[in-house]
Length: 466
Image 1: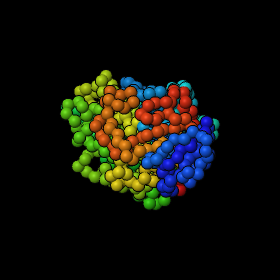
Image 2: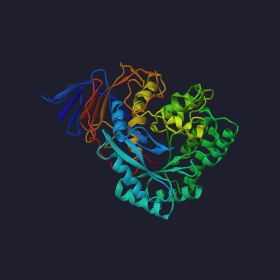
Image 3: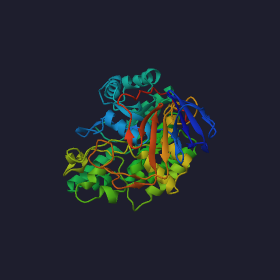
Image 4: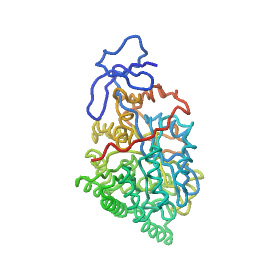
């Protein structure tokens, strides 16, 4: 099928300009000066719209088993919701736990996703047990499976936790094979002490989830991960879901020194607070229990994180989409905040929430597109197939209406959740039309896609290293 998008303003990291975009089959075929495209083909009028590459959410957890339950979005429901929000690629996390075979974990996630995704998908690999076998598996996954990033945890002792020796060995392996190490940077050993002390004092409400995970322990772990990567001869390191000013200072210092250290943040850390959300009356705050936790609005985390996005000390906005329903799932932690499943749903709202930063003067249009699409593609080996409006790239295209408005609500979202983390938020912009590999999947508020349209994307090594 041939499709011509006319009258729009293309936005990319290199600038903003009027252009018509020709799509042939699944690829972008050409860009023309306005009115310069071919006649006699199907057209979409994008007048007054921004034409941007489809969003890439580089951090999701569909169907993740956690805390005695499973994330409530499947690959079917979660990727359909992603499409509604202008995200046309997700990178989810396959899981290996201690004692399991890495390749078996990857195969299990392929089985969950295959034939069920509405948009394209790729995988990172969680290493829950670092040993000789899993280190060998890292080489095999990079060489044969298109998996070029591996996530480790300094948190969750007894579940995913790796000690410093295991982390160093994995980093050394990644330095050899070119992979990226992704790090959940919190001092889980110290956090567990604080959690048990709080519970012993009878402090069981959701707000104590945040109070027992202080920013100092995120900053300490971030610093330690950066130093371990230095010992591993500048192994590429990516800090996930960075939430706090002190941790950002550690990343900024490493980047100022020319190190291959990168970080993401998430919309929840740009907008929500410990007092207003985690501290909501009664058990209501359980809706916002996630790790790293929401930070205090009395401090300057929001300001510093937006600044980090402008300066590229924060490279990407992902969601860490790991939704749980309030009823029966979050309620597992009634009377004990440590048993509340950790996670917030947001895969549908990331493009809009970051765009609000443009409206508010916190980001440029170009930086918006970088943080939601182009940099994730480059960071994780998908560029230039994804992340850019250019001839030869996949025709993943979003028409975004800056004159539209989006009201976020559980009543209108498409995620499989019984609440919204951003209930009532009004965004001064709207996803108008979403095209995935040349197929219109969202238009006029209606869904036109299908389960199984999404394909697995083997990834190459990062093209974002210094």
